[in-house]
Length: 330
Ligand code: SF4
Image (cartoon, rainbow, N blue to C red):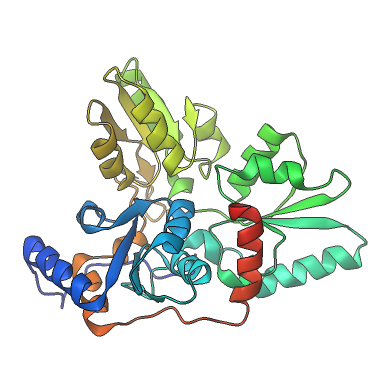
């Protein structure tokens, strides 16, 4: 978790969101650009985006985009994936410092050293990485999974080979349970999904009879044990859309996701499950990802205007692309 936590910039001048949206629309035409926005960024940005979704859907959308420039509103590894999938396009991101605690919990040099050690010990294994990893890590792996395709991919790994799963230990543990395959787990985690308070979830369930708990598989096991539906962001969205009767959902994932739920299934009520602020031990009702929160309308406007910061192609992107193609597109 080495990325700095974002704090309000005292020098940032307030600008009317509607003016910014108008300016962004003009710049999109002028610069031949499309905006891809992750479900975890502010609702205002999702509303002006050409494509919204989870990281897998957006990586696929990056291939479909017709414009010559993509503005990827999300975090750094997602911008890398867009560039990998669409190398001929210019990929801009609003803030180069928008990292990801989960991706950063597995640095490429440490993974390479661990793989080397396993090989020296005579272990034969495939490395399976969750999509929330840097391109450098992806290039060291055999398979990339999302919460949606993980079971299928795991079944493709021959039974006589071990599986090294990186970087999310909670997702890995969940996948061991659903697939029945033992795995060597990298000890990484997401700072947002790790802090949900089990006591507050129990209290919220008690106070909201008939409510349904939905959670992301990046949550720890004690939260998943109390969950009615486990799935990645897109799967959760499909699930709430499939239920017609008005229902109260207790949501254990990044709270900006509620904007997408409310747009897709307005008949329901969505309540964020509180998290614990690790610095003070107090509970906090929002569970915002500080990296996603670095994306603002101003920064979207500025990166379009300045055509920067840009994700540049690196040599190892080709190897990462081969792994992504094999895992997600075939
Ligand atoms: S919510 Fe977690 S996994 Fe997603 S970008 Fe933020 S830190 Fe990374």
